[in-house]
Amino acid sequence: MRIFAAAAGALLLASCSKPIDLPTHEFQVPAPATWQGAEVEPNAPSPEWWTYFEDERLDALIRKALSCNQSLQAAAARIDTAMEERIMAEAGKLPTLNLGANRLRQRQNFVGLPFPGLSDRVLSNTFSNAGLSFNVDWEPDVWKRVSAQKLAGDATVHQRMADRHSAMLSLSGQAAKAWFAAVEARRQIALAEELMDNARVTSTRTRQRYKFGSRSPVDVRVAEAEVARSVSVIRQREQLRDTFVRQLEMLACEYPAGDLAVASELPDLKSRVPAGLPSELVHRRPDLMAAEQALMAADARIVQAKAALRPSFSLTTAAGTSSNTLLDLVNPGLRVWNLAAGLAMPLFNAGSLKANVRATESRAREAAANYENRVWTAYLEVETALSTEGTLLEQERALQDALASTHQAIKLAEKRYAAGLADIFTVLSLQRTALQTESTMLGLRRTRIDNRIDLHLALGGGFGDGPDRPRQPGANP
Image (cartoon, rainbow, N blue to C red; front, side):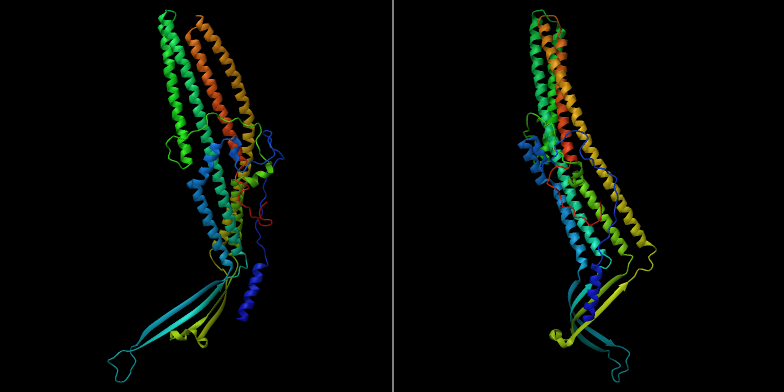
């Protein structure tokens, strides 16, 4: 046993003397000092980024969606699975201990043996044997195969955590967009109802003037048609509102009955969004963190594959007792033991082990390329959203000027119509133009809000700092 302890100690020291040497990767992704698309606040997004819109009902809806969503529950289960797999991987560094007990009862026949006077009988013997054993089996992690497997397990756990944070971010963005789409639809209904009221007033006036002979039957029919058209528009927008409301109810794990009440007005956006620094993006966006952890796991599997090319050592010992009487199993005089040390060296495998090394290296290069591509995409999404912000704001201001001019034209046309200097077609056309302009402006305002949501998602805002990011010295830059 002293020899076993000495050998085990030597192999244990050898297995602990060398750190894991992971591959390194060079990435060509420059991070500017500041964002170029627009002027932003230097602070990072709030953990609950949607509170930026200052709508308590939206806040409650998103929190409820995050607490009950089945996809997030599935993501949490994947985290639990990865954590258990990591425990299984780490267990390989320690010896396995087994306690065994057996009981054997056997009958043996002696056929063909020439015993005098017993030629017509079959001689037999029945005996029993019992054993109690304690087994220890251990493979020293000399080449860091088990350590690399544990590191890959750690990276997979954190990748799953980042995936869950990414799903939470996506769900919150989806809920926010559906909420503001429902708010816009409600406001669009109000605009259509306003146009319908104006059309009915115009139709009533036209019918009265027709009775006095100052208007033609064509004017009456055109005014009535405009009322019917406005009713159709209202029904169309009510259907759109119900669609978004039911989507919100489903996200909040409620039956999609279409009864959810939403705000009546879209919020005003602040001029600048908290965006933080560009260099902080890779530490905040969960999809980038997941890609980084996938790369680390791929690098660790290269170490595993290379360790399979080297000799493997094993130490096994067993101790116990053996007797044909159960009561004697605790008798120290009947103890038995064995000690075995093994070494296995791969000699011929048709190149499969080396091919496995090359395959894992290829997968690591793929993971590195995917990570770099995601970083580029992240910077593109942020800069595009920032740049789009200014463009949409200029469009909205231009539409506001156009709407103001249209309202002035409507007032002049109504005065001319009342004085008999213009026909009904001019008034109705200007009213439709005003409605279309205000409707377009409302849609553009929601587009600005959607773009602001996209910006928050691109910045990886929300949910604190996300999962921890374990790193090995010199593993990945």
